Length: 382
Ligand SMILES: *Cc1c(COP(=O)(O)O)cnc(C)c1O
Image 1: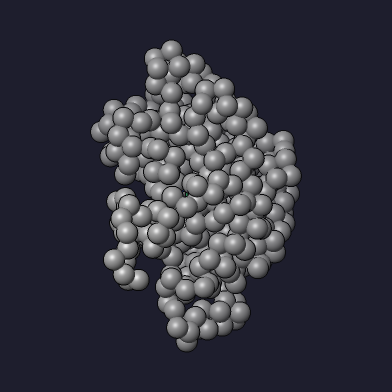
Image 2: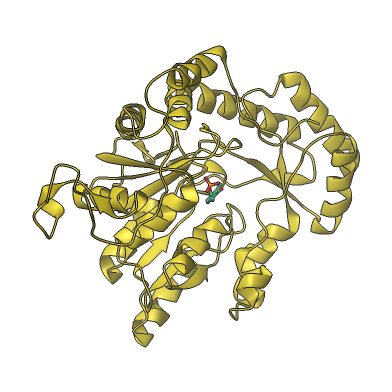
């Protein structure tokens, strides 16, 4: 099977992990803070808070921005369920903004209309979570302006987008947002096995997220409410979690991060090649947003005739080509439909979903593999 995504593990990754296994610390040692510093520097962010998944990073990001019961969080209708679940973990109400079916990204027009209605009803969300779908940045300039106008915070779900840029600024630089979250799941751009990181330019938010990541427990006398009764003393000052990344995972992340530019470059070259090989077929790639440089997590094609998606999908899988579909619109999931969501409110996501298919794209994909994918697709579409 040619998978749609796959990690790339080299000898230097294995050496980095092995060195940690032989060291004194498997967790809470020097590698996690070093990885946080390196990644934050790479994406032009002030601070990084590593977590054991992007899901947990999204959770602490929401909490640090004051999301709780009675608050509202909006995210994209076209995303993985985790972008919405983080709000539910906090006891908040989640809602969705429809997407532009041509890019799969949050529609700024839909966001604007929804904000006008929400302002009228006194229901402005505390946080909006745009998702850089497939690695292509959303229109962060417009979203940032709306955030200023309406007074909500922004968490970029950049699980797909490390290495991408918006008008020359690295995703993570936080020019138009409060926090950006990356995922290191093995299908993403770089991996730690499981893992994620929240980056921010706000030292207070970073400190709060790292407290929440580690039980809400502090050893900093400045944060304590009582006098320490000995050098062993620590205080739980808030209910937190164990969302820590291990040293083992961070070593892998650090080693992978050193190849981030190569990965994105390779993905971009393969995507360009797909563009060329697929031209003339009755399908099209996602539309490109001016100013957005994708990290190319996914290469999605949209079939001109969505009715044929199932048969084309089956034909490719039958040939051991690991096509996939990203994403089933979250509001259509049973556990969200139960909350009252109705897909007729998300025509962009429904139309996008009907004809979408992700083709294999990862750094280990050879041009020969890619030719196989394209010829199988050409045949299935004939
Ligand atoms: C992968 C992914 C997540 C969750 O990442 P984990 O690290 O697996 O928790 C969240 N949002 C999006 C858009 C993703 O693709």
